Amino acid sequence: MKRVLARLPGYNPRRVLIGIALVLLLVNLYSWLGGHYRTMKVDVDSKVALLESYQRQKGRLVDLSEREAKLRNMAGDLKKRLFAGAGESEVASAMQIKLQSMVKTSGIESESIRPVAAPVKDKGGKAERIIPLVVKMRLTGTMPEFLTFMKLLYGDETPFRIKVMTVRSYRKAGVKIFLELRGYYQLNPGSDGLDGAAK
Image (cartoon, rainbow, N blue to C red; front, side):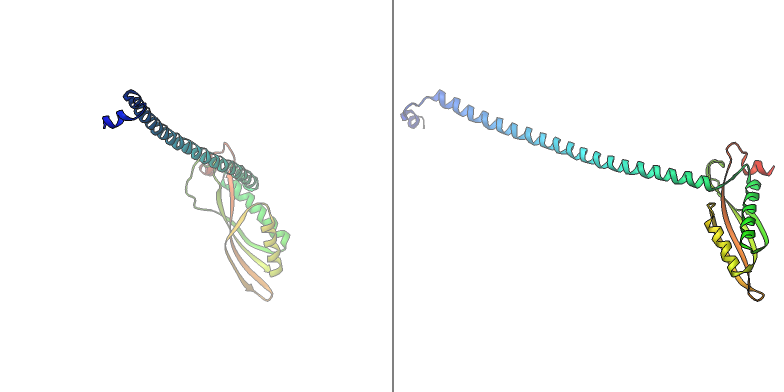
């Protein structure tokens, strides 16, 4: 092989070795640059993915902030509409007066309006939570009077919820109604709660 190469014009073993070394160096350099490029590409792709994820989360955070503000406003509006007092007896009296006023305005007759404590599971501070109070009502009158009462009940800003309702005919054109309503209240800040009101 050396003889064949020696016959070639301009053959110099040193140049051949340098050429081979340069080719190997270029191959290694190309391989190293390719690996480095792939590593950089993976790094850039992961950073782009993280940035896109961050932008999505940021968009969701804005949506959540808007929703939280909306819910806070709704909670504030609801608190304004609730009954409030130092204890259950004070609130029960206020509910009874409110319902008697509606009964009188509608022209229907009330046999009884009786607030009853609703069973409540203790969740957090008593002054912070919304507490239900059941009011049982027995009414008699005509159907138009009852419908007027219902219109007043649902048109009022104070939230009442009907849990049980029984309507049956009474005498000739009248009706006898049994209602079990649920009203809601919060205790005034600094009150002793239900136990303090009972003392």
